[in-house]
Length: 306
Image (cartoon, rainbow, N blue to C red; front, side):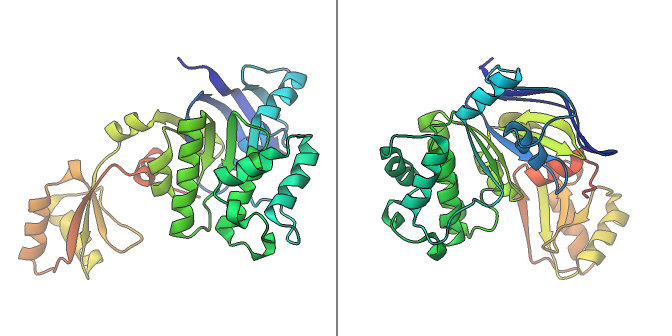
């Protein structure tokens, strides 16, 4: 077993009578890219703020790099970099000036570090440009640069690709892969873009209503998650009703794109196509998808988000 970077035991946080986190047991090992999956309000941001010391648990234990006591945790947090929500930047300053400001706050004397982190996040050419002129993707990368100033061994990233365009998402993924694979940084990352998270994470934690309901490695996810048959038709509701009637299919749905989805294990593609075409329902196309993180999560919570 690799060394533990972060661990919780029965971690609970209450606000009045409402639970934000309930008896949460979580482990992140050295080298993990830990994808944290859950709906809005599930407890992801609360857990990240607990790591940063911004929220204090009601009960339970938190460990960072094996340290549990209050003063030890304060020292351990110096090895953690955070990008939680939107980075706080001064729009009238350029990137170098913003980073210099945070160096003073963090007590970092090595000004060469500013150039190093700008190079890591591919902002060297924009270092003298005022951040008011930055795109959202550039601001997120500068926020990541701030999180990297203290040479962190552990990065905590809350929705770092939220709102980015496709190019910005690919850029951010490349930076995080470089940090993990070449610099040995352990990463905890949440994202609503689950398809992108699936390209990056080596381990997942699934949280629902404040409870961690499953931890699984990327390999275990691929083995246990279902492949899906997707069928595009101009009449999805009629097609779904027909397949339910003729093939007694229960696990069938219409996705957000208006296509029918059926677990590969539940039906044969040739049989599905035969039934639809014999009944005069046109088919525009079909696809067999790899195991899907979104479907896996919805199966875990019983198909009911908040």
